[in-house]
Amino acid sequence: MSPDVSDPREGGSALAPRWAPPRPTAAVLLLHGGRADALEAPPRLNLPLLRMHPVAKWIIRATQGDQVLVGEVRYRHRGWNGPRQDAAHDARRALAELRRTTGPVPVVLVGHSMGGRAALRVADDPCVRGVVGLAPWCPPEEPVAHLGDTEVVLLHDENDRVTDARASWDYVRRARARGVPAGGIAMPRGGHAMLRDARAWHRITTAMTLGFLGLAPVPSEVFEAQPPFER
Image (tube, rainbow, N blue to C red):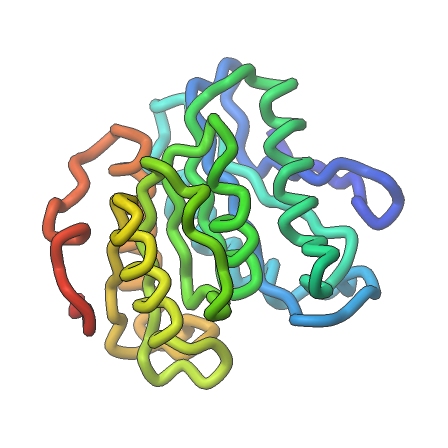
């Protein structure tokens, strides 16, 4: 299936499939980055969205034959916007649309930066099995009590100058204290945009996604290692 070209800025769908088998039995939704505060719509040339395309391609290749739908969450606004939590609301819209299309299939969320925060915030959806956060934005007050038994892994370059890896590791600690199966992976390079050593980011993201969907084993050490985490 070709990507959904409907535009959420015009009241369209929040879910844009990039690959949809005839009868999906699982799904992966990708959530791109944005800004802390910006009410305008994402631009037509949306670089954070484009950065997630190779991630999607890796996951699509790895799940060929497994009936996994791979799609993107489309935002109505460019920013998180404080208590509005616009990206999280759009993520919930996308999950609801997915459920209407496929039924209650297991879902893994893969979110970068602001999209990582949105993915973590909606991880209490009953269909979400796991979250892979890529250089996620995890403010100190970000809640963890809602995660339950959802599996969470956060990847972060500790030299990231946009979001703070220490905040990611603190999020993992707080989640573990609640009994959440959470882990962190310190990436040696890549920065916030994950450009250097991009293949390593894509490979680990894909491996964790397959593991959370039950299509491959999840290395137990991911949930046992102590911060600072090492790849």
